[in-house]
Image (cartoon, rainbow, N blue to C red; front, top):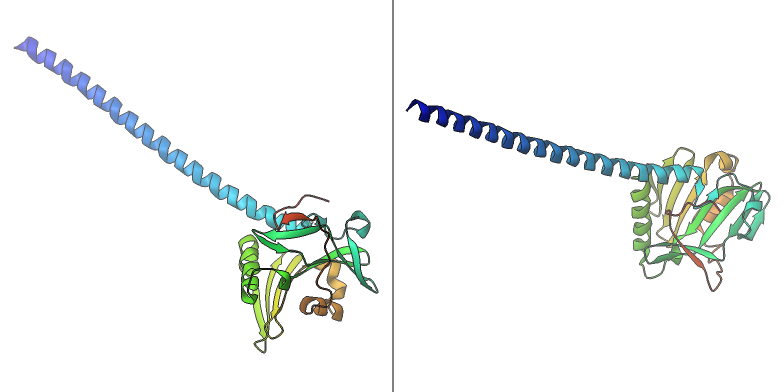
Amino acid sequence: MIRWTMKRRIELHGEYEQTTRIRQTIRTSGEMIMKNHHIAILILTSTLYLFTSAWAADLEEGFMGYKWGDDISHYDGLKQLYNKGEITFYSNPGESYSIEDVVIGDVIYGFYEGKFYAVYINLDSLENLESLEKFDVMEEHLTKKYGPPDSRSSTQERLYTYKWKYKDVTIKLKTDRKKGNMKVAFYHKPTSRELKKEPLLLEIETSDRFFPIEKENNINMVPFLESWNQR
């Protein structure tokens, strides 16, 4: 009887140690799963933050490879469209931008005193979209990149302006619902500060005077606000 009791105690002790090891293994596995889960969330959050910061940082430096304040002599591919005093507008006949399958071809690059200060885009040229759809596509794309507009304004329920601001860059999305004109403009404030009261800037933001832009037969398509390689 004593011998059986001792044997049973040994067996129970072995079972207890085995159960303890199993519990420890389960606890360790659970902790590793939770740790990996937290690491995955951290990596995803950091990646999204880095992408958003990269877009904003790139816009602060320039626009799609054109560097703010650069001299026009750096860009051989640009063709002069118009000149008035110290303001000159250029286009790139061999290049257009795209948002998925929507082509953005009417793009003007503004230079003041020979320095790159702004981009003007005519949304009227977007094909296969209704008027309001064109505005919505651009607003959605800009909001995805830079967050909601910092301000919205309207004049007599006709001229609507959405504005984004990031450090030294201002983005204006405008539509004249009476005329049907739609434009988006990117301004580098330090370079364009002296042009605030220039009537020509208001005209290019609202009229079709400088559009459409003539393009070459074979053009290079670049994803809009996604390619920032220096030219």
